Image (cartoon, rainbow, N blue to C red):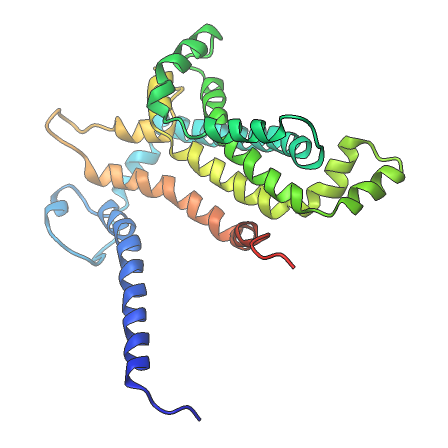
Length: 280
C-alpha cells in the first residue's frame, strides 16, 4: 500500500482543475450561444446562465427562410464534393508518391507541403481571375475548385505518410495474383487506410464547411452562398438592429452537424491521428 503523499494529491487536484478550466473555456462559448438562441430580443439584455424556458421562435424564423435552407444545402453539397475530390486525388497521388521510387519524389512532396503554406488572402486575387476565366463565378463548383486547392496538399501529405508504412509484401502478393495497380489500391491498400482517410476527410469537410473568405468573394446571390456567408449577412428589422438570437440559432444549426459527425467517427479519427506514431 502506497504511503499518503500531500504533493501527489495536490498535483492531481491541480491537474483536474486545469483540465476543468480548459473544458469550460472551450465549451462555454457554444453553451452560451445555445442559451442565447432560446432567448427573445427583450431577454438578450438579461444576463442568465440557465435556460428558464424554451423559446424556439428564433429557430422557427431561421428555418423558415428559404435562403438559409438553400445556403445550408450549398454547404453540404460543396463540403461533400470537396471531401470526395480531395480523397480521390489524394489517394491516387499518395499511391504514386508512397509506393514508387522516382527522381524528384522528395521535391514533389516539398512542393505539395509548400503550397499549403500560402495564406488565402495571398492568392485571392489570382484565384478570382482563374475562377472567372473558367466561368465558375457565383457557382458552387467554383468553391469546390478553390477549397480543393487548399485541402488537397494536406490530404496528399498525410495519406503518403500512411501509405509508406504499409508492408510492401501486400502489394507484391497482389501483383503476383495478377491485380492491376487500381485494383491493388482499392482492394488491398485502401481498406488499411480508412483511419487516415476518415481523419483527412473530416478535416477537409470542416475546413470547407467553415470557410468564409472564398465563399464571400466567389458568390454573389443568396441562392449560391454557403452558410457562413448567409449567417454573416443576417440583418434585423432596421440597420441599427442586430438579431443576436437568430444569429445564434443559425450558428447552432450549423455547428450541430459537425459535432455529430465527430462523435460518429470519433474512433476512426483518433486511430487515424495516432496510427504510425510508434513503430515496432
